[in-house]
Amino acid sequence: MHKENQPLIFEMTKEGRVGYSLPALDVPEIDLSSHLPSGFLREESAELPEVSELDIMRHYTALSNRNHGVDTGFYPLGSCTMKYNPKINEAVARYAGFAHIHPLQDESTVQGAMEIMYDLQEHLSEITGMDEVTLQPAAGAHGEWTALMMIRAFHEANGEFNRTKVLVPDSAHGTNPASATVAGFDTVTVKSNELGLVDIEDLKSKVGPDTAALMLTNPNTLGLFEEEILTMAEIVHGVGGKLYYDGANLNAVMSKARPGDMGFDAVHLNLHKTFTGPHGGGGPGSGPVGVKKDLAAFLPKPVLVKKEDRYTFEYDRPQSIGRVKPFYGNFGIYLRAYTYIRSMGPDGLKAVTEYAVLNANYMMRRLEPYFDLPYTQHCKHEFVLSGRRQKKLGVRTLDMAKRLLDFGFHPPTIYFPLNVEEGMMIEPTETESKETLDSFIDAMIQIAKEVEENPEIVQEAPHTTVISRLDETKAARQPVLRYTKEQELVNV
Ligand SMILES: *Cc1c(COP(=O)(O)O)cnc(C)c1O
Image (cartoon, rainbow, N blue to C red; front, side, top):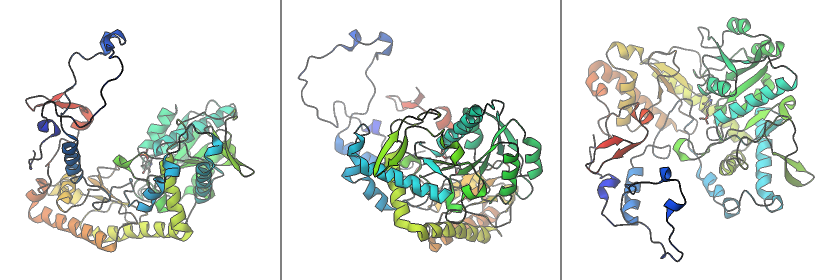
């Protein structure tokens, strides 16, 4: 499958060659077997590649050039917001005064860092319309779970131990039912109607005294704004439940509408999506949670507060759900999000939303003649096409996704949401120029034509990448493989 002969790091091995130099041992050598149980000791030394520092540098630099990232090409991965991360964020995150502080430093020595965190909390409260914010959770899903634990603590503090059900529409992000389950709730699926929105009658039939919360992904995973939120809020609050807003994709509504004003009690944000933290393999995430006043007592501790002109972490919070992250969360991501918010300003953040929505609608309407569009109303930041028409000609959405690689584009999210046959979930994001959007659209149209005229070229794609088709599930099923001396891949 290797089309070029870039050797594997194991093939570059020369016995005895090393990429480090250590000073000579100046303390007595220790025999590990007298310190560790024998079961933990290797019988043979590890089979590590033996290469020089320069060899390893060149090897990984060459590999990194084959990677597709936001900095190298368009990346319309639905629901993931793979947008450009401005480099000013990186410059600020690297300031020595931030980068070199230690989490165990005394509060009096890190007031500046605490001020940034506090201001970021304040900005996020304002953006979401919530009363208080915790920055602790390390990802979107972690934020969902944190908020659900708070909602659970709230109900239990009211003596309501019977609220065991969390309602999750079938158009929710996949992490929603997963987080509800991990937080100890039973999830109840609420159906979508023919417009792709929550079916209000179905919701009504499923709420009751056992309802703990409704988790709403908005816009939902079809890229559609839920139009009946106020009705949903009335229904859920009417039975004493709480409303949770999955705000991972806030670039669809930011500065236009606020979850807090719509009646939501809790919301999480993804700083590594909307607020330009590097995403995916690019670094740790951050999923702050905002809550209304009546959930605030349950926020994870310590809670960062301002007393007169000093910042301090409050530990004396008897109703807190406890700490959800060691130390204070992913501070480097706070700096990036803070820099982004400050450098964009209120008008900039509003423009973000306008362009995110405009770009998605532009692309959707231009592609509409060539693919099936299951939901035809205007979308928000993303939209879903169906490759149903192409499937009838023997070409799957997977094939078209692979063909996009030949045009230099990362494919969109495919086969999601599950209720769309041969789905393609496309999120162009607000940071792309019209020229880039047009070249992606041209590639998609070209592929649609190929499907009709020359389907093999799509079915056998990609043709230009270093590696052709991979086994789609092997990496998940057998995460650790190893090369033998004979260069055979084996399970570990
Ligand atoms: C990405 C995403 C999440 C999960 O965020 P992670 O940081 O990947 O855990 C949740 N909901 C929606 C709508 C998302 O797009």
